[in-house]
Length: 165
Image (cartoon, rainbow, N blue to C red; front, side, top):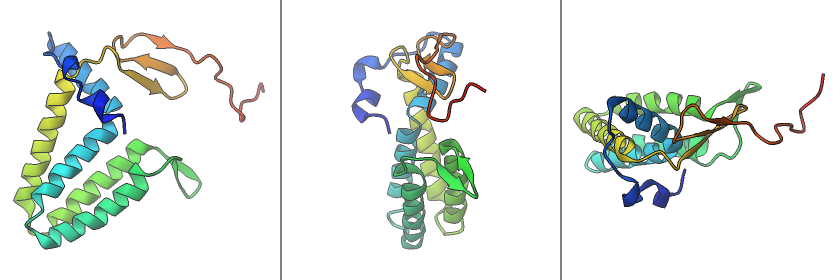
């Protein structure tokens, strides 16, 4: 996750001036703070399940899966020789978590918690200025949050697996 202090700097909060800026801010902030936002949503979901013991047990089991498969990994997940991207792990764990919790008796709590979490993420994404944020975009280089069209190539893109042929 990104540093929480970077995420909650009050001086970086402002209203977007246009709809396109709103959409751009949300996209960039979701890309930059993806793991922080997942933690926030899971925490809100946890709070909503405090009075449902069966749901809480299911949630704790799923949280262990989240910890080992998403939050605590330093290297990509490898399944049958294929590298699985963090986004794919999140896209797999999220519906499994929600579906397993829906099989318990806390459906209203889960829906309300997910809605509140989504609203919190969208409001933060819309209000957090993206001018000073930097997104590392895989092999292409670095994309600055302040200017979507600006791409800076890496100085030395070669790696140990780089070959000239």
